[in-house]
Image (cartoon, rainbow, N blue to C red):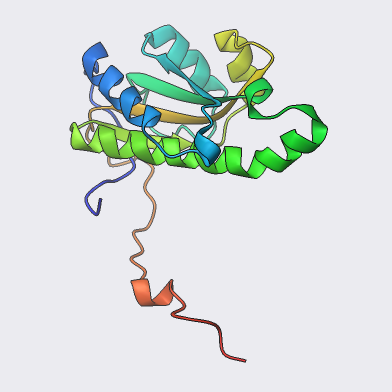
Length: 174
């Protein structure tokens, strides 16, 4: 877990379908609220489609990834009626996160770099992929073998926050 990093620059090497299926299989094992399986995954490894998605994804910094997994929510499965849909919305987004973590860790275990992205046009991705109306893309995960970061490439400062600065042990004092 400590050696996993977000990959933004990818080598010009395809990820095999077998490896993609293994990574996607990890998402199926992610915990979900009440055991609901309202998420659907779209795997894209066709270069022209990946390029179209990159055009509407400001959060995709770096070069073109060989593959993208789109985590979608089927809102028809997520709840019935307005109250139920609103009640289940928070759990549904948490479940997107558990799927994402499972995908990131499975990719890392297989030597595949990955990066989660939430900064994208959901409507544009839905149009590019012809996603049915009851489904909505909620997160993208780029996948590929890590490549060399160009000297002019985008980098973030590395900040290591000690765990003690992130944790409150027990109740807060009065």
